[in-house]
Image (cartoon, rainbow, N blue to C red):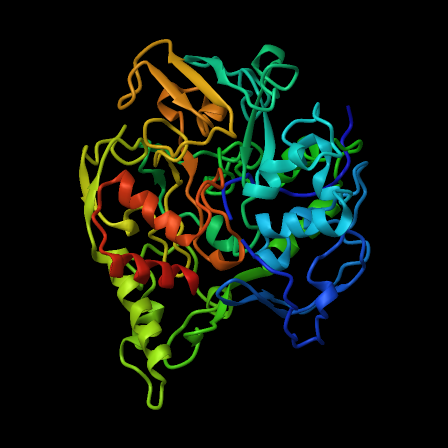
Length: 499
């Protein structure tokens, strides 16, 4: 089959923009309320700056290098059979991801007819009655798309991978893993959030010459032979933007012709120029005043790939808020002080990290190891991992994962050595990185997410199980028995809301 260009979906993992509030004015002209949703083929001009109201304040989207006419541009043009384009699932108002709230708005506005709800991955399973809202409950409620992976896995160059574990279906609420979309037909269906397509220089930055989580050299791009960051997709199945585009075209859009090199280059150019971050909080005010250095302009003008312990400490851009500016009202002063405290909790409050592959094994940080949030979210300005970020935090594996009866449950049986922490049999709602490597030790590993634009893209984690930022903090508190105080939890939430 020949493939034709279509939408890019950066792996699934996280994430919120609620409400149908109007976008703010940009330097290139006002963005009207009706323009919040970027429909494929609308032929609008993408501005150099646009502000969108979200649940805690204002998200800003910057496009460096000047505005972009989107008519005929492959990121914005629907050329596949289902009417989607890349922008369908990477909306500017959702920090170049897609929130569950936006999906719900589109269902209500179109009666479920928007290309967003294409049967292949915009429904819980293509075999379900597509006109029924319940058939799209995972996208509407959790922002999840169906991700179909081959089983057994395929190597980057197309060869077969022999897995060292067996996979069985323990629960299949939508029937998608019991038929042609499941293991019996050479596939696995899992459900994930679309990763945000912005701030790409940080996701592509290489901070180490090797992968400290594996104790191995960095993976190489099979086409160029150059090292790659490993931080693009939730399960690491595509290591470059070109590979990710081909993966999206061959799966999410069922396209008919291959992308041209020119189209791919135009998409990469656009992706490389987009920066998103929170610009203002409705209580705390703008994040780039009173000495603070938040906002997407700072991202666009900063060096990527710096380890926070070597460069500027992670989230130190808010340190100036520790001392209230003259004339600041009590509510605004209290909020800014809370953000600064949250940054210190994020960096300085240590706890015992246990039974997490990618951290405690296989290379010997120790089990347990005492560290803080910056152990993994360590890149200055961005909060993603300087090293390739596949880690099992327990978000999909029992007994650590929250109950998720709406997702499939897989029984993994290791054929050789048992998993270092779970033993020979593992129950998981998403094997994660193991669907790429075929290794039992990788079950449940998910590429760590960036922390920018969070208020615009709930729910969180790759499976959307955390409905808001407080739920994220509560999960970590339970998972690692951290013992956050109520004040520390509020401070962390306030910090994450302005990133």
